[in-house]
Length: 367
Image (cartoon, rainbow, N blue to C red; front, side, top):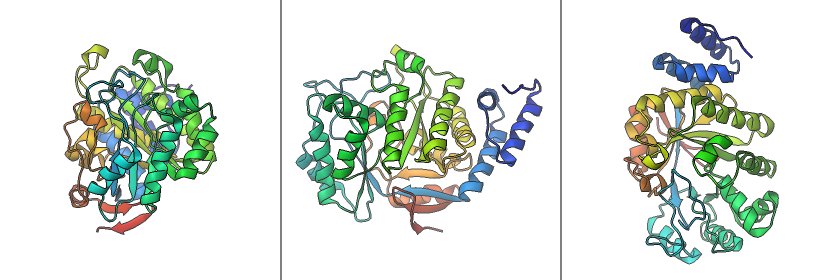
């Protein structure tokens, strides 16, 4: 284990030297940065690391979030989206009903459907497969980003199929990539305290490992701001970093702040802007082998997202149309933005907006 210097200025200088030379940061380095109040120095280091990877480019996509069902067998403490079957507000859309919704909101140039939802045990695995197949049939040029690692584990349990078999059936139906949700914090202490009864840390990682081996490039998230320690945040990043060393399958890391003031689990207030910017910056510094860190305006708000672009973030997510999961928990941001609003937000931070597809291929530069 690396010896930690007692002088914080010397310690910060040592980390800055590592960043300057592209050396990997350790667990101790990450925890030190979280304990430091020198936000501007941390931000400057993260900006340097990001400029090295992405220059002044900030990426966004024309996409639409879709939610086939909010019925879920799990009761995660941070979730206000889920419902029980038969409960007021519970729904499970048929593929035809979802196509009707998409037809009302679809715009030319839309390149991605982002699908997440509940772990609904009242419908078979085939329902989830056919939902994707129907979308892909009607919108063959749109990439389908669907089903978190936790959902894939759930499908494996209800179908009796292996992760590889589940993923292959979904790929055959039109799946293009996995979103990053379901990771939350990848420690079992956290998952036990927060009633995360879905996939374990290792199962979530194994789903993405399997997806990468099948040729899918995927996303990874971290849900921070509740009962996790700063060390657990860094360990979460390091587990993702280790899997990335193995597979090189993650395209982007997305730190998401917990939204609800859920006093039942000790979540009494939103994360601070200070913590949000520090987490973006530390994510960029720790996740040295992932190309992009996302500033998710749904959780940050648009103005803090702008600041995040000088603290290491290089992705602004997308148009979304109507976000439901964070807003069911009390998010204060817009439910979606137009292309023009995203471009304005990025240019306002003196960055270059780059419209992309799901896989970060450039569609158009707005300079």
